[in-house]
Image 1 (cartoon, rainbow, N blue to C red):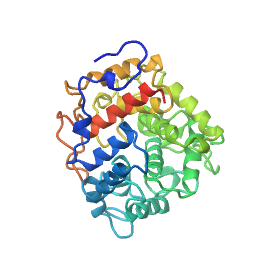
Image 2: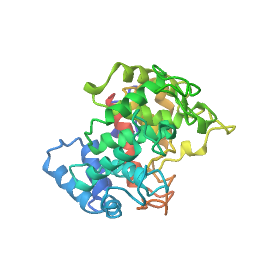
Image 3: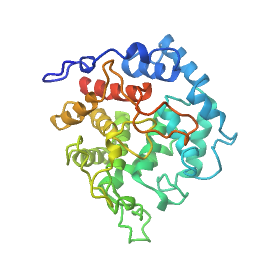
Image 4: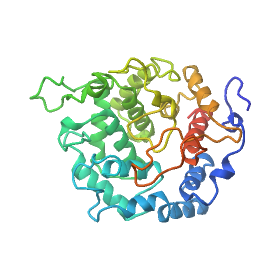
Length: 347
């Protein structure tokens, strides 16, 4: 592995070549995303289109969709947060991370519509309870990103992005105590700079990573002044410590959660250093010296063949299991390679 000075190629950072492994036909979902995100095939490339078709017809996407109710939800009607991790919220998030798209299966579009009808409050808050008080940065970021990745074009998504961006800076958002105000914080999402009641009202880096990753993937033409301001504040927060050390406010704990250093798939509200690095790289900070240690930590986890193990899993809790812990894992390897490529490309 050769990493000296400015990184000019993501492949130079690998101990081996995992691409043939990722492109095997036994996992059409991984193959599709590797063709798209690592090899950069155009959306209309015949090989990519075929891989996308297969990814929707068999494997995890097909299994998750097979459990969907005809009305568009999973497990039970309502806002879809519970039960974890098979209800509507988690199924939609997982589908997006698997590379599903609304143009790949009509059931995905139905799921997006159901989610917006039942989990989005009038003020733009994605919520666990249908009321705006059930909102949180991790939920907001995850669902905004999922709908964006799935290709949902419902105009209601704009209100969700508006709320998410405004709450980072606090611009136009009243304190939680001002209960008569139409736009205010709540007990969960309790203040600017990612403050969260679940983190003892301190800034939550898990939520910040998801919000920043989502805003970073928002098309340029959709970025508002509020989004730009939120990105600036968010980047400042994520770089307020060395991301490799993850010494962010830990709320009720004396030290950072050990889950920061366990790379997994899928990624729900628990966050790892890999996702923080992805968020910063997507925003153009991949070659920022402050990210150097995190990228080094990521590279160090690969084996001699350039593969990454599954360290954090939801085995038995989701509709599909994604591999054995501590074993080389295609989904985690794909995540790691995407980050290294983004960082090397300087995007």
